[in-house]
Length: 224
Ligand SMILES: Nc1ncnc2c1ncn2[C@@H]1O[C@H](COP(=O)(O)OP(=O)(O)O)[C@@H](O)[C@H]1O
Ligand SMILES: [Mg+2]
Image (cartoon, rainbow, N blue to C red; front, side, top):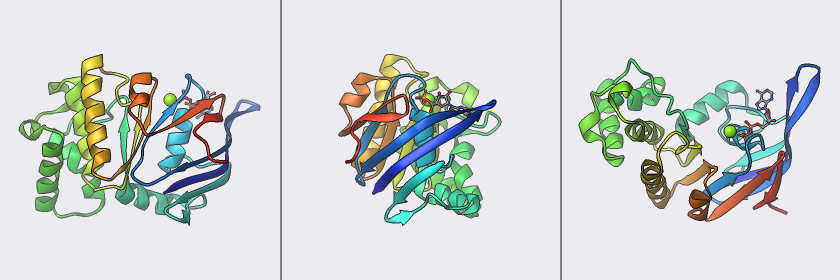
């Protein structure tokens, strides 16, 4: 379970301070398909990055499975990100010089998993996203939808409990975006918590929980 309590996030901006998140309290029960919605600049990415340990709150608490992770140091976070969390980004963020299989296996390199096991797990993950026949392709040799599938396979290869996706369909056409959403729903049905930042009301409609942000505050879906 994910619990945020009175979370604030400030960014320095010149001599000023931008409060990207103001007093956020939300609870996401494990296994819930959750959307974070709101206008551009409302704090969606900041919130997702804090959930994934890519950024730290300025104050407040973040409980992940009963542990207060707000104060974890960068090394502890790096370890936890690699094991417990998977990330999907709007721009895919694949490494262009690596094949699909190598991109997917990369998180396991950091875990010092032996090569043969990395290969077989990457193949399993690529099969899960329907891309077993693209293992040796490089990102530039694939469509946007295929690249996002590779990115999802990379997010899944470590078997995380939580998958965080920041506008995963934002660079894709409507039909391809719907396929990616179908895949994320499937991943959720396997029991994982999936949190999706989206502009799409169509995507939000498919999610069990919707957290709406406006100017850094929760306007819907927060906890008391
Ligand atoms: N690294 C940063 N430095 C300064 N301000 C930032 C930074 N990242 C985000 N912000 C500001 O925080 C607010 C929320 O940004 P963001 O979380 O990216 O919104 P969204 O993803 O909803 O578009 C915006 O006002 C943005 O300008
Ligand atoms: Mg954003």
